[in-house]
Image (cartoon, rainbow, N blue to C red):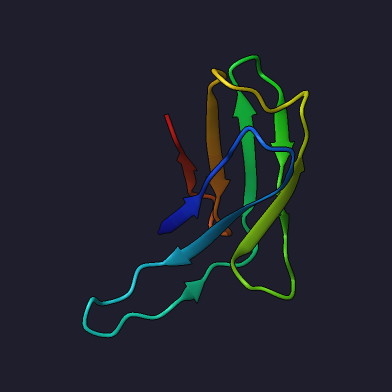
Length: 89
């Protein structure tokens, strides 16, 4: 599983891509659909991402100023269609 995303302190659309790894000698983007993607701040507030049906494997969330902030901590969680849970520290 390859999970790629970034959160900044700027309000707006933030995205995460979820895909499967592929051989280094035949790289390709293998999107994973049907995931539940969320981000939680250090205070326990949670924001959920919505799957973009026009871009497979891309999940998006509109994050605004009350949720974002310099010096705050965040943890990303992805639950795959087969119920495997991936969490960042």
